[in-house]
Image (tube, one colour):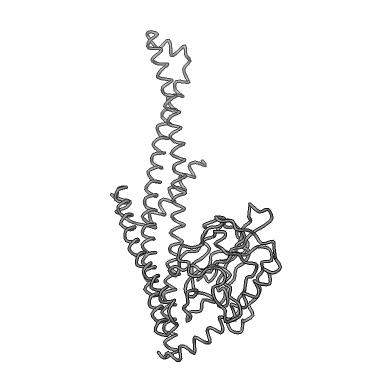
Length: 427
């Protein structure tokens, strides 16, 4: 009964997938070669789109290094809009490819189910023959044959049936094992498709925000450079306040940790996102405020790019808001090489995140999507501004979260703090 129920559940899953992704050319006459050709064509299209995105990223990076003028800011916004549109096309392409992969695996699931049913029918027939033979004694079998050679032939036939039964049973077990693999592949592709669909929706929302931001700048400045520079000054002052708030909190914990800091362990964690390193760790600016420290690294990619967990761990804190790190997640990772020690990785400025405090994650699990929230001032387009993920590595000892001090400007927001390390020492 258990196997029957499992079989029904599998067939139901297949039926649901076929209804969810109707495609006569895939489920009807299409062969494995046709699917392979379709997937290759999709990959070729995706490669062309990704090349365009890479070109846009180069142009954006070049523009970000230039003077902060109204003209240059509008140029960057226009580049980001076309880059985001290309990212939407790329995600659409990936969704098509995922659907093709689901169709391919679904077809293999159906074939494996049919093969299992066929082999079970063969086994059922063989078992029936064995049962019939078991009803007769060796004496009866011997008396049925006219001579000893016929008796030996009969005995050989019985042995052959038993051997074929064993071979068929082995084949069924192998087919069932193969079916489990196919079903796991199907679940993986379905999860991948769900993530791509979510990414697509986030990126579309980003596109609308970018267009709104451009219009807001035009409305506030009336197209005048003097008005833009005045707006720029106010924005920079507010950003400086947030940067100093973060620096002071981290510096206090670093001083307490003293010589208990960990040595670098390269390869301990993975990169959280594919993209371009736009700002490193340490002395990278902020000198006008009397300090010059960036407590993590910045990685830029097209808006909506997935951000993944750098290692196995547990979510210890999350935060949202318009100040400091914007939407962020902190994950604790126990270090096997150093007993009793742990690191915390921070993923900041996300458009949104998937995880909640107390949740266990595996390396590579989806954390959220790249965004431009918090202190990534949309008007100040320097190399560390704009759409990116800010990635910080804290020592778990002394790590904490506090309410931001400038809620009157940004509304409620939280600031994670602690003794930081150069992430490149652990990547």
